[in-house]
Image 1 (cartoon, rainbow, N blue to C red):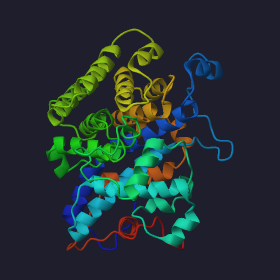
Image 2: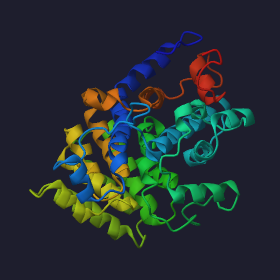
Image 3: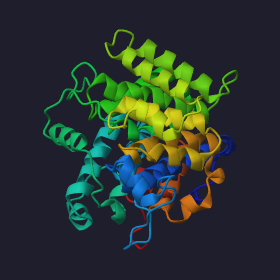
Length: 402
């Protein structure tokens, strides 16, 4: 537990205690997404036939560890998810400490430029050049290319060159509906306590904007609004809405309110309905997921994740295993299913085997805790947190002496 510079006020302590009620679900969602990502990463691009021949009739059911590190490697999905969280928390901190407002997507967009540095440079060069808004730039393991999406890379390069408007939905940056947008937005929902929760439609729209930074087709960003709504309602429940099926139905209504005239809305709703229907039949997961798709595009990723979460609502392992065993984008479908199931089950209920060998578990837990507590300092308050200031104001991970 981090030590404050001064003793926090009683009301601050009460806020922290209230936040801790949600800590297990927040940890579960963030780490759950990384688990699904790491489990699915080795079989991404593999056909069903290859998966069955390699891993047996149940497909891949345990991590394939990297020989050099002995860890289950995360892909670009979890890398970008971490940078999403970093950007959100920098924006929150600036708002509280300097009164500088702004939509979360503005800060997340800058954090994605930091992620781009990790894909194209090395840590020594980045440290020499300075800049960036992400303490994650100090994490050596993030300087690894893990099959980054070409759409993400291209869109971020063009944004870097100033070729895009800030009207993400009115002037789309491209026509891509790939899953590279939805697989990274969970942190927005995890940091949805307080004022953001009062207007969940606004939060859902922000989820769409985070994806629209790189994916301009409405089927590339509308599914992210749905996912944001679902995870938020799981982590921060409200009376009268208890089952996952009810939450999904409400999320579907919300996206219809946000984008009522979108020409592709019916396609998205059809995928959601199909996932719900298939989750109740007796066919195999392989067969059902085949009917939804392969997860290369965002609406299919969402559909597969919803199907697996409904089918295995209180069985984290069963759900993520089902989510990665198909001929498609296994790490992304595993990541999104893991985000949902991890939020439902909580971190403590996730089997230890998924935690023991997971790459960057310490960083993921640190980020999850930061998402839970948020910035508890304010411009004129007396409470100070040296660790938070270092990470989200000075943009450094650890003391130089560490």
